[in-house]
Image 1 (cartoon, rainbow, N blue to C red):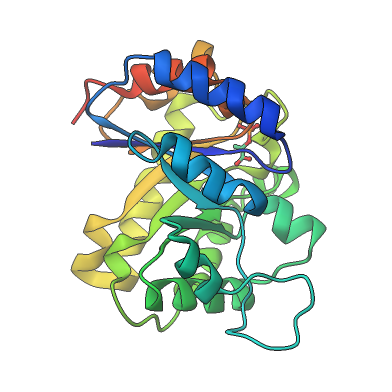
Image 2: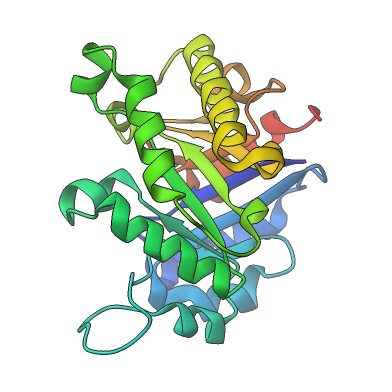
Length: 248
Ligand code: PEP
């Protein structure tokens, strides 16, 4: 089974969602691909009603604290009440714009696991780190710190390898580098998590579109994709899913 996660970021409106849902339902979905979209909080329940049968609905963030005086934040219990299936954590936009730290990300993952919600942890190097040949060091540090001392069902964690310089830029890593870095992540997960590490799915994200999906994703190393811009259109999103189909 391959995984295709969309990330709508701070996009869409009710009328665009209606159009998306209408078009999504018209498509024939491959059976061996699991579709999921991380949507803005206000649209969770609306989309659950519209798409629940064929597409999991998740969110893009959660607070690192359980409850209390955190104005504007959303707690893991609130996500649970909504029946949210998964939550992105550590997306580079949150790390860069909102200064989220690995320590906070670690707390978020622990809270999500306790609530039985799948954490989708994003890791990846910046352009500066790539140029300084630091990709593996960065990935290792992010994994070590974000996955530190976790309790519970850790095998449900999903990792998205997203080179920061490839997100929303139209640039992608080469298929060879994607596989090399995902192999490194998988090896490191086994090192820090033992046998549990073997169960963890590792996706690629960064300017995936129908034109490059087959080359980047259709192999046994990459377990799927996290897609931003190309997930806003149902046709494009499902088209990427079709190219993931047929492996594993
Ligand atoms: C993302 O937001 O995680 C992402 C990969 O975006 P894009 O596909 O637009 O590069």
